[in-house]
Length: 256
Length: 278
Ligand SMILES: Nc1ncnc2c1ncn2[C@@H]1O[C@H](COP(=O)(O)OP(=O)(O)OP(=O)(O)O)[C@@H](O)[C@H]1O
Ligand SMILES: [Mg+2]
Image (cartoon, rainbow over all chains, first blue to last red; front, side):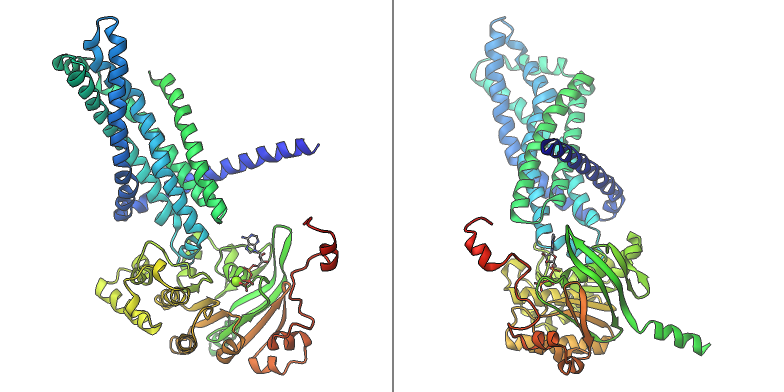
């Protein structure tokens, strides 16, 4: 009996929380117009989330591209098709690894920071203080962070892919001796802008939306203690990573 | 004509009116029919044992928590019934000094004090700087204007928050423990400041404080709350002459008397004998 009650309570709580998260999202979207007026707030958050995540994204992109070239070369060499290395690296990056790995890195680097910052603002009564000064935290705190994350992720994913392609070039052409002309020409002829780059960007936009939503909501909804903030931060990373991987499957199934 | 203005003025003699307020946190009742009014233009102090819900009450007056029964009206408006826009309009006319200060940690002291002005007005920066420095000077922190909240002591942070609460010239200010952590000199300055600001700007002050002698010295009206109801209310003199044993114990700070020091808990001896189980 007790177990059934606990089971029911668990699902009721989960459902209630999902409902709260959607109401929260609606209010953030409602605060969008005010952001256009107060552009500096958005720029500042773009810097905090985007620019600060850039270095880790670039370094990871370089290594992922280099590894792709190594693995791809071994595989393609068996068929005597190593000249197709360029397109293999580029398509893998642009369609899959760019958005997905950037999404995961973004959740770990920027998402967790967003949650912790907002959670601490709540724990130290800064959010209450804002409300008492008649300043809406949705306009001042949540919406700028949410939209900054939403805008930053696609840009970061694009840079990840670009650097990755270059990493593939370094290993494939400079080290393993694939012909440079073949590397670039094959890539150019087989990567379509709308079909591959465009759909990869759609994925990145969706991930940016979901990761930032989770991060900001977890921060605002946390229990305002040090424990509460730390478990909210953990939840952000776990839920965002799962969401990125799950949505990637769904989007791939739909789009490609 | 004059009689109608008279009657509306006498209606408005109190700025905040709390009637039959009920509220609980979880299963724990905090207010059980609280009733009192805060007279306009005066300094009112709320006293009560730690944990009775004074901070909670201030948050309810600011509309951050909703009563489960009863009502709070501020300047004739029922706070719990206001829409967001009206509530924000009302809050612009209220200042609140939080118990923890609640300064924004990513802004310097100067920017913190300037924050309400920058958010709600289009004043030129030179005028803002003027107003902010004036307030900071009043609380003795003009020299700390470039420091960040993390670099302030507890007492300094409280004074910076006070400067911020005052900068918008509100109609009412709520102070949650303004004197905690102040040395005797800044305490004296704050007392004078609260009193003169109240007089000069004609605003209404509502203060929660545990520093009895100091708080009473500048109060016009005192409300003592305990266990969710008003125990006694009146001018400081009336309280000093009160024959309620409760009030006398609270004012003298004696541990023996009707006011319990302990939160309600199981019998001490029993709990000790029961061993480690909690
Ligand atoms: N977030 C919360 N969740 C649950 N209970 C709370 C919460 N905040 C406060 N309480 C409870 O509400 C009661 C009133 O708290 P409040 O902070 O209003 O007391 P207070 O009168 O301001 O005390 P103090 O003089 O020590 O500041 C306390 O008994 C506390 O246990
Ligand atoms: Mg308190």
